[in-house]
Image (cartoon, rainbow, N blue to C red; front, side, top):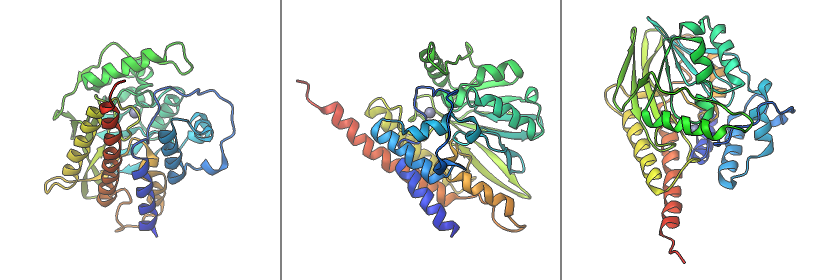
Length: 336
Ligand SMILES: [Zn+2]
């Protein structure tokens, strides 16, 4: 049953893999609304399909927009995913908190007004936001870095990003000015990270991989997660969608990044077997996390799913191959 559910979710996210991500325009967060009942509880497959429709048509389905902007629907209880990992995000965007022996590390910051929910969630899992040591940023879209300025005022954390990623974030923030949901980015990152860099905080190492494709500056982060006496290598893939593509070259970079991550998933040494996804609906995390509540001793960890990760990567690749043909046809079209 679970496998069927997973297969269904995986198949769905494969199709939507090319689009399952934010639009570049910040949504209007204050819109009064009632969420469509079908989206109550954030069912992954339904939401994935709506993002897929959005990507295919370029038109945001109204119920998706309402749901994304409904702070009540987006609120989720933070939860412990592994001994050292907490999910502190909202329904459609993740933020992950990793506890280390020298203080917590946060991956991504959400955006206003959800950064307030993030801060509450961090407190709920017993962490004072002021104690955060490091904030790892995946890429420059508002839904991942819109909360940087607010968090920076609350903590002494080092904010980490690639040079290109920070530039993209600043450009996106600049574009948002004068529009609903306008946001700002500080002048510079505290730590400019490069491909292959290893950031050590206390007993935990964070491996940064430049994985251009979703945006040119997209970075993925890998780290070890603990489950009792077992340790697994996990990754947050920095961006999944092909919704911010500017030509065939970027799609080629995307495919190379997917292939590279797949190699890491299937490596004989330290293979990656857990995806701490940036968007819960993309892996069926919303449903899988429920299994944590009823898990009995000795049962496998519900987020340990190398096969699911392989399938997701295969689907992302297939979507990118299709998109590559479209982009190449566009480039090769003779000018009149
Ligand atoms: Zn994005």
